[in-house]
Length: 242
Image (cartoon, rainbow, N blue to C red; front, side, top):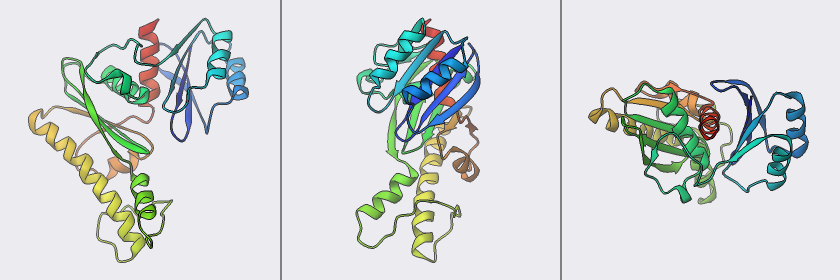
């Protein structure tokens, strides 16, 4: 059994996995040593762990994992992955790499891929049909756009809960903000998909991240939603390094 740890910008996702699938998932603001100890005790069959963080590396946590498990992998620019990477690995976030590996592992072979991860930032990653990760783009996520509008203006309010998912035109400032930010994001995602499919009509698109389900419902293009794509990819990287 494998322990999968993905420390993101706002939450830490943890999974217990076999070689092929995730069998249990947890979410924490940050994985404390106490939380990690409880998970290790609750799953005595764990034999290996993989740790990914887009924030500060938690060295005490890595120390605990190394004490309790025979094999521990921390994802960095030297970690082996099951596809060719054209991106500068020194500057590549481990969560982005894991999402790419997850999608590549799930997708039919010899299909062009686009992986869209929508959270604090929204990322667009491209994988060729021959298995090369060409690179990707980074754009502000939905709530990052709303926060920026509040921060850089004197009168626009901060919207923290986007309940209005209409793509029409707003008749209040709150509606104008929510619909403007969301409509811009949807057009952006649809634009990437249409651009790719104009060249490769059979291209496969995976959507993940906290806003994935909402975005899928508003898109005109067909996509696959995989909420745990990063965790799945990390498990594949761990298995590959075994």
